[in-house]
Length: 247
Image (cartoon, rainbow, N blue to C red; front, side, top):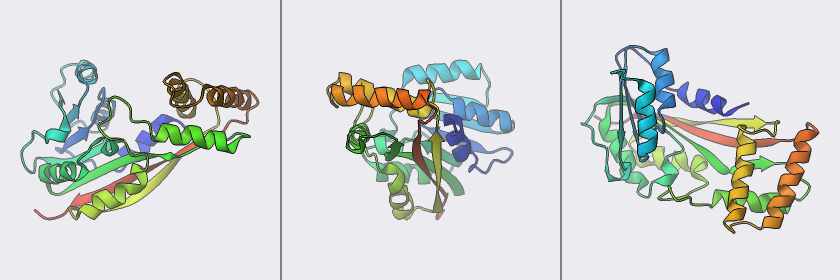
């Protein structure tokens, strides 16, 4: 399986129909919305992200297509949209980064039309599995990565995947269900999800967040497993699919 399989799992939950309006929170360079636009021509798509560079890339990719609108903004300050203007609002790996999660959920509820759909998906980073002879070392690295609050994150919660139900359905604003998708990877190669996370461990080692010796031994073993065709990695993504309650 590849990273695109995660996106297929999440985007496949959106109930697409002609004339709808979709909002992507944390849209990055706009790839998801552009993919949806190929599937559904008669619809409009809005994307917001805190990164001006990502929004510039999204606007360039949309190439003047009037169905797409992208804007740079900090969504923790609220959503600059009218009440009840979206048929669907979705996000991937966003909620853990927001300090006031309840406030964001209230905003999503506000901008959704009556009965509108929200799909919120999140990797549960503490579910990462690497094979290895030293279980304690692998656990140390995974836990350190899970707790690593990177510069662009206002908050960090590696358990957000398993907490989606509590936050979203527990808000009382939506009625829905949670589903899970397990990404598995047996190839240790650049661009593969497990490989990329292993490289992130290396970035942590350079910052002194994990022991250099731990990382060096881990990397050597993962490379050997990959060369022998025995590498294994997995991570679980959870997705909440719900409908707006009330008017």
